[in-house]
Image 1 (tube, helix red, strand yellow):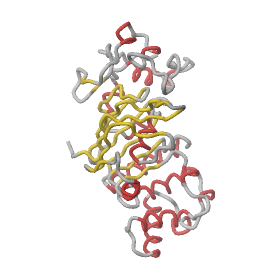
Image 2 (spheres, one colour):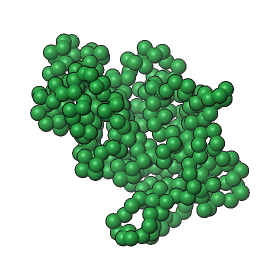
Image 3 (spheres, one colour):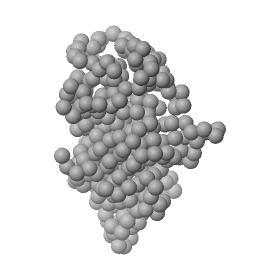
Image 4 (cartoon, one colour):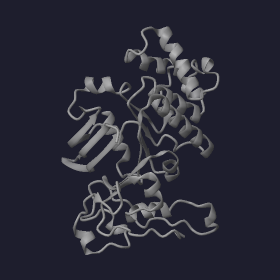
Length: 331
C-alpha cells in the first residue's frame, strides 16, 4: 500500500444551533493512499460534502470540527492557522465544486482566475508565464481553442466547459489531493462522461489522489478503486469498488444498488428505499438505518454497530446482520 496522502481519524463535525451542538459527522475515519481514487457515496444529507469542506477548511459559519484528526501528507490540518490552510489549499489540495457558475467569479475572465492560482502559490513568476500556463491547462482539460477561451467570462461558457475550467484550476499546482464534490451532477450524461475522462486524465498527469463525492453509483463504477458508504454522518461500509458494487454487505448499500434504474427493468417500478434519512440532531438510537431496514431487530434498535472487518478481505461494515450472500436477482 502506498503511503497515505489523506488520513482522517474519528472526525466529528457539529452545527452550533440554538445553544446546542448538532452532530453532522460522527467518528468518520478514512485513508486515501497516493494515486488512489476513493468514492464517498450516500444520500443527500449523509454528510459527504461536509466532510470534503472540513478537509479543505471551508466549513460554513456555525459549523466546526469538534474532534478528530485530518492529516495531509502527515501535516495536521485540524487546529492549523487559517494562513497555513490557505497555503495548502490550491497547492497541496484542491477541490472541484458542484456548481462551477457560482464557484467561478463572474466579473473575471477564466484565464485570469487560473493565473491567480498559479501566481498565489508561486508556480509562475510573471503574469505572462501564468497566462501561458492557463492556456496550456485549458488545452489539457479539453477546452477547444484555449487561446480564445482564456479571455471568456464564466457566463460565456457551457456548464461542461465551466467544469473543465474548474478542473484546470484545481490541477494547476499539481496537488497531492484532488476532491471532486458532485462534479458531474448538473451535467447531461454525455458531458458527465467527458468530465469523468478529464478527471481521470488530470489524475494521471498529476499523480494526485482523488476523492469523489457523489450519490451517482454509475460515476462510482466508472472511476473508483475503493468505495466508502456514508449514512447519517457515519461510515457504514467500505471496500474495493468492484466487490462492494457487486456484492454489498450492508443493507443500506444493497438498497442503494437496488434503487438504480436499469435498462432491463422494463416497466417495473423503481425500488425506492422506504422512509427518509434522519435529520442531523434526530438520529435514532442503535443503528441509524434501523427505521428503514427490513432486517432490523431489537439489537439494531438499541445497540450501535461498530465498523469492523467483514468476512471479506479489506471490506469493513457496521451492521449487526450483514448480508452473507447477495442475490443477483434484484428486481
